[in-house]
Image 1 (cartoon, rainbow, N blue to C red):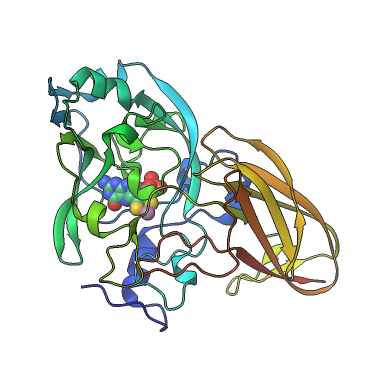
Image 2 (image 1 turned 30 degrees about the vertical axis):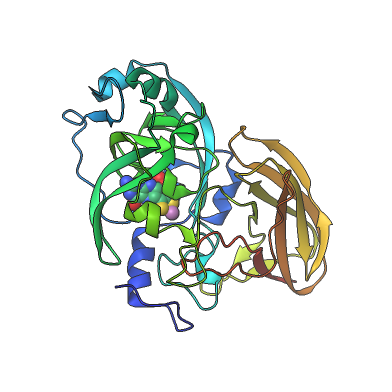
Length: 353
Ligand SMILES: Nc1nc2c(c(=O)[nH]1)N[C@H]1C(S)=C(S)[C@@H](COP(=O)(O)O)O[C@H]1N2
Ligand SMILES: [Mo]
């Protein structure tokens, strides 16, 4: 069983997870589209061994015409591709005090890829969702045990949410077949939602007449104040801005050395609730507006920039995003038991010489 949140040093268990699940190197925020090898990665269990030749997608349950599809037949369906920014719900977890013990992300669990595949809604229409259907469950090939619950990874959406036209069954990432770690041969891409909804290694789409109560749906991914609190479900991505740390780093501390004078500060900002409307850049707690670049796509991050006239000395640089729905990133951690949705501002320590 996982331990309770702790103020202690990072544990061996957190190191094990961190060594498997990489974050985006923050300098890779310079790319509109994250190169596949730099895309963040989160795998709960093991990467399953799936043979694309014998793999089938089953569409079943509370539908008039259940069917199965091969990868080839999926690839013959209408194809679309667009960039989507995906962020892990646990991003920011290790910056909470006490620290929920799980994958110890700081700020780096976010990336943008061009996902290619076929829209989900027409497939559900073909299957004919029967009246009384409640949830659409996305079952995956990976299997494990979490907090004592053994299960295949699965997440659901309500039928109404699942019919959203932007949801993709993706077999390509950045113009190539999905890599094993990103869900080969097929994953779900649900723009605007946190990572847990982007089910990889998809095997079965099961339409069910009652609310899905699988572990990853009912127990995990809730904002709760303690273990006993049923909480509220984690769904859409909260706004966040990140900067590319300027200057050069100290190997161990990551403190940056920056030359005094004009420094170009660049970053990215995103929100799953509404478009990013404002980004501010902070120096030692004083905020100013950054210039916004165009979004990389309707479901992807946008760039931002400021020119900073850096005075000599030690400084803390921060940035924060506000979206068009009025959501602003907090300065302090948003604490919750599972360590989800902590979009507190990034801070970067620099030493200007
Ligand atoms: N089947 C399956 N899908 C999964 C996961 C998983 O462990 N198993 N992890 C989820 C989580 S928590 C995240 S953040 C994203 C990460 O996607 P990526 O590794 O392609 O960046 O995948 C999601 N889909
Ligand atoms: Mo995640």
